[in-house]
Amino acid sequence: PQRMMIVGLLLLLCSCWIGSGVVISNASPRYDTAGSIVAGGDGNLIKFHDSQDYWLYAEDYGGCQEHAVNGTLCVHPFNNTCGFLLNHTVKAYSSPSLANGTWVDHGIILSPTNRPSGVLFRPKVIYNRNTAMYVLWARVVPFTSNAKALNWTAEVYISSQSPSKTGPFTEVNPAVNVSLNPGGDFSLLVDEDQAAYIIYTSHATGVRMVVERLTSDYLFSTGQVSSVFGPAPVEAPALIRSQDHYYAIFGHTCCYCLAGSNALVYVATDPLGPYTYQQEIGKNAAGLPTTKSQLNYLANLRAKQSSTGECVSQWLWTGTRWGTSPDGSMRHDYQYWAPMFIASSNSSGDRFQNLTYQESFELDLC
Image (cartoon, rainbow, N blue to C red; front, side, top):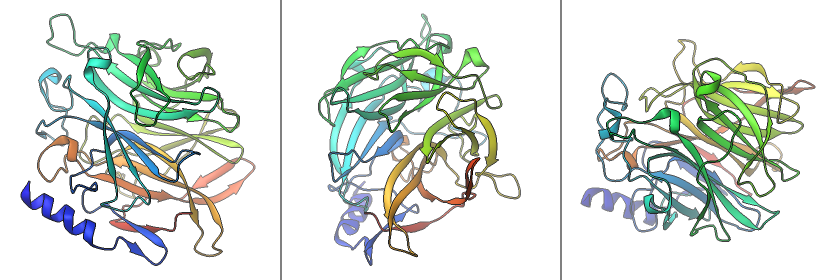
């Protein structure tokens, strides 16, 4: 711990900028302004319209020590291993630049006492301009009645809201009424017209993908749902809009896998589909995952083009590299961030460049 604190303080003292851009390193943990490692798993990175700062909402797995077996942290029994405990919390951080050492820790914004009992996964926070509220969603899987296993058939989505980015978040819906319960991994999209959508997997779909429209307060489902798409089984999705097309990006199931997951891209002209397969961008020629991470979220940032200096939309892949913690604590697993670039565009939509692993890169944010 003392050595890690020294490293963190050195990062605070050093310059994290080259030219006008910020250097993002994937070769070390991210540190906050106190020199502590940022807990960044499973959440989302977002810049709100009313803030100059970048906000990171993350799942904190507590102080448990991870233990890998056969390339995964999913060690049976699930009810007594790191990653499957009842003490998961949601934390909030902010940074003016994304630079290492600049993250401000705003503490816990959702604790186990303020949600249904169970294992919490994949929290996401979005802003609702209709209600001027920040909305937090999470997936919660309860234990069976004898507390000896996870009850996957009883898992729920919870939704809560707050007038503040840092909460407290008041639980409004302890079991969101999605059409294909019980839902699995998910992500959220706020469209340009301020309508919101959830993309999720479900046991009812054979662990394939579906997109559903939310109510205007973003706390419930309207029941408007797409057809099921993608192979089975898949997880860790993101849903984005680029120009006039919608892209669902996700990978095959990868339970806390050390190798990371792939990245399938499906495209549609309407958020409720139909979605058709476009490309695979997360595997190399040998068929191995290129990012060594599992997708958390695709952040929509603004950055200057190196060729023109124009400020344009820049997608940033954010994922978790399971089993990489420098101190063995799952909350400190490395985060992998990388820019996503468009290779070509036509009437059928954008085609993305294949993702590659980068130790570091520079972003000229604007």
